[in-house]
Amino acid sequence: MAKANSTSLFNKLGQQAKLAGARLADKHINLAVTGLSKSGKTAFITSLMNQLLEANENAQLPFFSSHREGRIIGVKRSAQMDVTTSRFAYDDAIEGLSAHPPRWPQSTTGISQVRLLIRYKKKRGIAKWLSEDGCLTLDITDYPGEWLLDLPLLEMDFATWCEHCAKELRESQRATLSTEVRAQIDSLDLNGSGDESQLQKIAESYAAYLKQSQLAGFQLLQPGRFLLPGELAGAPVLHFFPVSQSQLNMQNVDLTKLKKGSNIALLVERFEQYKQHVIRPFYQQHFKRFDRQIILVDCLGALNRGYHSYHDLQKALNWLMGSFAYGSSNILKRLFKPKIDKLIFAASKADHITPDQQSNLVKLLDSMLRDARKQLLFDGVVTESTLIAALKASKHGTTQVNGESVAVVQGLTEDGRSLTLFPGEVPIQCPQPSFWQKQKFEFPHFAAPQLKAGDALPHIRMDQVIDFMLADKLQ
Ligand code: GDP
Image (cartoon, rainbow, N blue to C red):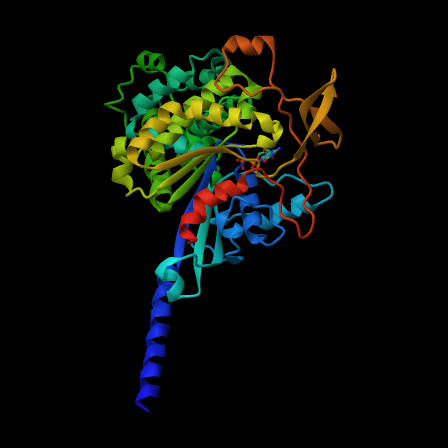
């Protein structure tokens, strides 16, 4: 009898220990994915989810250690944490990639989320004995990198912001692109009584000028929501724009003594409201929750577009990384307690180059990030640079040229023609502007890869990224 009691007590204790262990083992990662427009965020999240959901024996994930060790039991989708944020459109993306011909998923226009539950076998240590398997909750958030370009605005007043914009406008191409909107701004009577519809019209022209600059290859463009307003499209909080110092002088405007109800008072008010109601809430409601971050960089696209685009992308990345340099940023410390412990930079769309050029592409990315990364090392964030093709749309092969074997890339154009090309060498740092005068880079646009039922999406190095982001939580 005594023996039976002690056995059931032992079992009970064992069960309690297992329960406690299971709770301990329930882990959580808030992974954020960003990058400037068309850097490949949607493609990345689609591929990431697909690789994990299909992490079965067919999966091509040799560098994802938990998968290689056979410890991933299953992955499923679950209701997302924040019900006020849009759901990442995974099903639409998969439907498009499975169509004939396949379609690229719709690019990111705002913030969206998705939650995955990853059930896995424990690897070692006491946790293994306390419960049989663990569950990692993975929340993935997609948001436009343009929104991070707004952080420095929080420490600017309207006058300082106008000065900053004036500097950007000194660049000759941007000066040309902004001719029309500058004329509209110059004709505005700043002291005249606040005219909301006129301000809206000019703000829309300003947003159109930013979009044209983006199409022309410029990347350091803000306010970020003017390019990707998300749910704020048409809202008055976006109806402002910078004015020039000469206009302020000519119209005798003193920004420290604003005429109540005037156009200029309204512009200053909107600028402050944008900081208060748009920039701050993004950091406080979303950014502060992220533990891990991936930043996608389309280095090849910038090389295609020319020196001005490459140079502007580098400047934009430096601005963008201000959001991760906690040590030097009082504003970030005031806004939230930063948690991000791992940051990965990935040069995207690496299926455009031959495998022998991959190490050059990572070096190019590193050279682009050199200055900004020093600060991150100082802050103790673990960073990693790599390259990926989230949705590999080409094949690698060789062809004979004058009796020599040359590496080539083969894919389909959007209109279904087959294309074989030798994309050439990827430079390990930004070439001089004169380089583009002599020759051009050619990393063309490929048609989307075809997803066949039961297969996982083809990729390059997604498994390494997954391992870097998740492996420590799957032990
Ligand atoms: P987002 O704006 O950052 O969400 O960018 P997307 O993920 O929509 O990608 C923009 C475009 O880049 C896509 O429509 C594709 O044409 C291309 N793209 C993205 N990822 C890849 C990739 O891995 N390989 C190739 N070849 N093209 C890609």
